[in-house]
Length: 458
Ligand code: CO
View 1 (cartoon, rainbow, N blue to C red):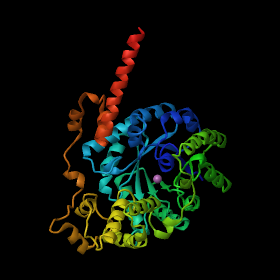
View 2: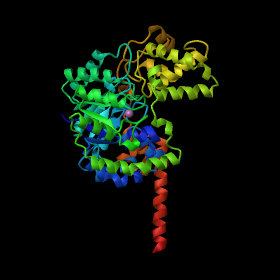
View 3: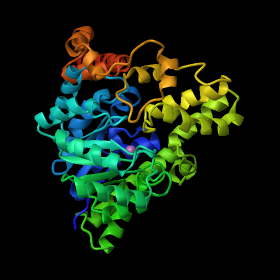
View 4: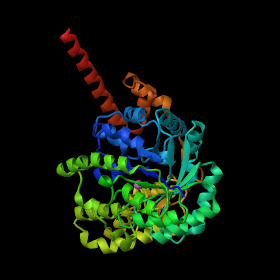
């Protein structure tokens, strides 16, 4: 039995442990080895890498992708895309989504993993269609969450829906590492029994369940798991590649991975990790297990956000009440998965409901947009009374929010003018306007400096 392994060190592990601060120069030398390790794919782009390249690393994200592609030639390159939100938090019009997907694939992406925070697949439809049109592998992802309506039937329904939409594979995305081994077994089994596409599982080691969850998922027929080379594994990152490979091999599975090369890759990343520990950018506590998410049924990241928010308002003593309020608000919102941005939206509203001395006395802009239907369709029924409190006489939209948006690409192209050297630059500008513009201006200055320097030399 073959089990595919996706290496996440360049994207999710990098994002989860060191806030995506790994510069290209820190991993350039090891790319060839990574290509020779026998991975099914290498996740190296999307999520926060794009933003972080422009904002903190002074790197052109497109250039990074092209450079990776120029070395990693055999192994498929994979990215994570937030459906209609691309790599940000707002909905972009379809022309931008299509262009972004098209150029990502042209610049080197082979597998596009696409998800929507609400599992409203109208929000991944356009990205998916364009992925297929541009000739890449389209993977539809389902966000995993626990709620009375998120049962096996519901997940099977979502899986079937993705299959009908033409995906090449399906991913179950457990972004907070709360999926237990038995849940994984039942869920993967149910999907394998009902859909014919390969099924991948994505989890994190946050609660310590990760490796067990993967193992049971594989016993149920899971085709692919996401792991991180051990130096960058564990805690809020993925389970370790080498450990899973070892356990699987012992049990008669084939991963296709070369242990000697894995060791070389890990030896390479050990001092890189050490550098980030020394600089304080890698906090040792993120490497351990934290089971609070299992106790409170909220993701670890959401919990730490909530604690710092309450601390700021000098109201940390209200934490138990807020933790009781969260499931209530979530139910009233129709059980959205607690993934970005829904985790923040639910957390902030729950805190406001407790701190303001009355429920929904203060309603955030985001909760209003949510009830209006601007994020998509709620997974379950929303509470009618709360809906009335939030919207008043306003009616929610029923169509896809992106259908209400005007095309943006040509407009943005004009706006940024000659600072953008190609369509990729225009897309960077649309995704992160101020940051991209600053990056372009720096680039111009640096080029000007180089030119004047070489003239002087002559
Ligand atoms: Co993840």
